[in-house]
Amino acid sequence: MQALILAGGKGTRLRPLTVYTPKPIVPICNRPFLLYQIDTLRRAGITDITLSLSYQPNKIEQLLGDGSDYGVKLKYTVEPQPMGTAGAYKFAEDLIRDRTVVFNGDILTDLDLKAVIREHNERKATATIVLTPVSDPSSYGVVETEKDGRVHRFLEKPKADEITCNTINAGTYVLEPKVLDYLPTGENYSFEYGLFPDLLKRGEAFYAHIPSRTYWIDIGTPERYLQVHSDLLANRVVRFHIKERRGQFDAATVAEIDDLSIIGDDCQIKPGAQIINSVLGQGCFVEERARVENSVVWPHTRIGTNAQLIGAIVGRGCHIGRSAVVGPGTVLGDKTSLTDYTFTCNMEVSKQ
Ligand code: GDD
Ligand code: MG
Image (cartoon, rainbow, N blue to C red):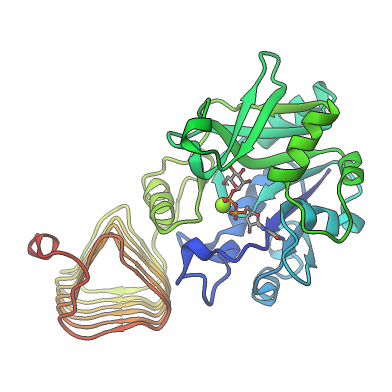
């Protein structure tokens, strides 16, 4: 059993965060995102993992290396240009001649992968796709199933009047190697628009796995990037309970840091500062009476005296001027510098 992680997208919806950091390794609670997927695979006993890259591949390879630090064996393929989800899988075929688990490289889930593989084997499926319910399927692939679990219809990014159910493609598949023979070589090709409809036309054994009570999120937008942090901080993700929340850092005794927040190594937190339900990356500096709430701050950022960050995402190496108010929905790219007294939201928040 092998795994392929599709990690070649540009992460456009997470810009400006993904300008210098490719989406697969954006920090989630101070850990590169892909490590969560690697954990899930390792727990299911899968250690032969290929990363399919295209955008800023060197940064990912440099960070994760051969995988030995994480108890797995990592291999890499880099497409000359993005070849689409199924095109990327075909491009990696020399490395994946076995039954393969394929992950979209931007979903965080506490799925029981062993159960998916067991069901795939019992059904002698050619392909198994994991589903999850969502309230608005329009930005996903909607999947209708039969009573016996067979996929009946797959429709990517349906229009409002095409949505017939709330179960969507959760971006996890188990594929038999024969699927590779259905894919064109050297062409841009998609699982969602190409292979899945094609498997249905061919009458292949294409099944859905519907897990019960499983956490699932696509981290690919700023709203969901913040959401996954608040879910992890609240320990709502069963298989990823956070135990260690505090690195080695300096904090004034009169600073307030709530139990939920994660503080990276080498941070300095000055008197009267408040850190609430937030994550501070390594080496952040929070000045007197600054307040950081429901926010994620990447490493080496400085937050000035009296400044407020509420519901914001702040990239690496930023400088937030004194008394600035950075409000809900704000996303600042790496190295942003905000002049003292800047505000990015209505005054209601600043008065809180
Ligand atoms: N190597 C490689 N090459 N990877 C790619 C390419 C490519 O050309 N295109 C996309 N990917 C990777 C992305 O990095 C991402 O991890 C994954 O494939 C899915 O691409 P997204 O761009 O994030 O797709 P989406 O979120 O709009 O939709 C997909 O995911 C949904 C679940 O989150 C689809 O699979 C939907 O059907 C699904 O519901
Ligand atoms: Mg996505």
